[in-house]
Image (cartoon, rainbow, N blue to C red):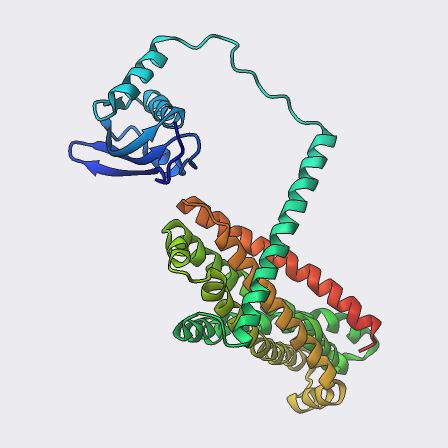
Length: 378
């Protein structure tokens, strides 16, 4: 059959007397992308007495529709659910009756051979290459959108930007405070065990201050924001993808990168340095609690050691890392949200993938930046 511009769609509605009606619309042919059937198949349980079909909006069809109906029929047969095919077109019912009348021959289905080690390695390499290309392409699009924002040519809603700044900034303070304070205590306790052997416990403040300002403050803040904000971005954009809101933006002539990605990236770029400095101070406060509680180091002595040891470059290194981390968190969350499928399960997978991608990118970037800082002797 010729290709059509009407996309196939699949939904369901509940009817009285424990009946479930599956609604089919659009053109179901080989040139169309088959919609996700996971939600429909998940609903097929023995609590339903009968499964029916509504094909009033159905257009052209071919084997794509028949394979779906056969899959639904097999699931209903396994679970003891009656299938009412009266709502299907006559041609579809005839094809299904023919398929049911002729039993499948034994041995027709062949089990595909398991790939060997070399083939698996090749497939993983190809997947890694494709993933790298997708990431670089998204980074390029986001960079173009951000440059357009700097020149005042990006189309977005300012109220969305302010809400995102609040979400990424003030609303993240409680979890950043708790984690940073505890990390500072852990650094102080672990370091003090060794320093106390040489009578150098007064240098706990130096170790905690350097560790938090140059490394742990920015890194822990980035990981927190990846799990909190990056996953939220992926879920938000994934839900918009499921509801066809992103397609609607494209239809109206808006760039989804400028409208959705750039405000989120800008919010994290603005808030991450502030959260990083705040995390540094909370970590140093946690270290002072350990020094005071275990070694009677006064707050004044602790503060004097910090002021004498820390330099502006130490904070600059951490703040510089936090800006890069903010960009990576935004890119990982928005990219996975844009790549989301069309079901609720895909939204959850996008959020999970955003966290994994963000953490991997952050750790790799942190290793590279640390080597650069060491080589430049900052």
